[in-house]
Amino acid sequence: MEKEENQSTNSDIKEEIKENKDPDKSSTNKDLKPEAKIKDLEDKLARAYAEVENQRRRFEKEKDEAFDYGGFSLARETLNLIDNLERSKIALENDQDLKNSEALKKTVNHLDIIQKDMVSILKKNNIEEIKSIDQKLDPNLHQAMMEVEDNNKEPGTVVQEIQKGFMMKDRLLRPSLVAVSKKTNEKDKNLKKDEKSEENQSKSNEN
Image 1 (cartoon, helix red, strand yellow):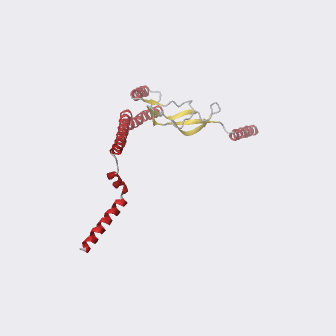
Image 2 (cartoon, helix red, strand yellow):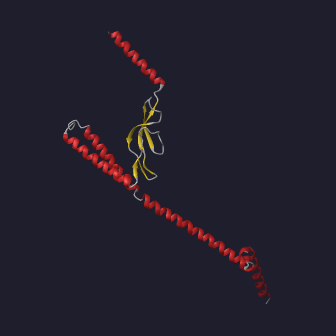
Image 3 (tube, one colour):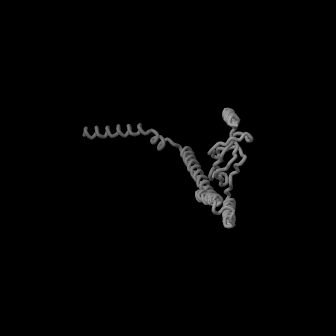
């Protein structure tokens, strides 16, 4: 009998310890008033609504981007065709066997027409060439490949376009590869003058 009473007492003590370890649960279950419960539910509902609204906005943004820029990769690959047409035209024009021939003129004209049609199609789909020549170098639009001495231009001005760049709406599809101007170095100027002077002196001695 005494053993049973001790077991009962131990059980009561364990239950009390368990409740003390989890005061929030005990308080929530026993002490929370109906008004507090309603406020707690309202808070949870507001958080759930905010989360759903954020997801909806994110999905809307992703849908709009997919609609506006879904053909981004295809458009970038298409630019390779335009580049190849330009290279083919240059190669034909530099072919000594075809130079000044009627066949060359007709072929180049056809290539020009195809290239213009392709650029026109891109433009209809909001893809346009980046203006580069005589523009100040913009790292967001241009990629400088080389520098060219030109004292008539401000340093950093685009003087040559190696490969055309394109924009797709407000996104960079491909940067322009360009050559930019730089001032002639004073040491280089003096060196060239000395070389020219030595050359003239040499000619004078020969005479």
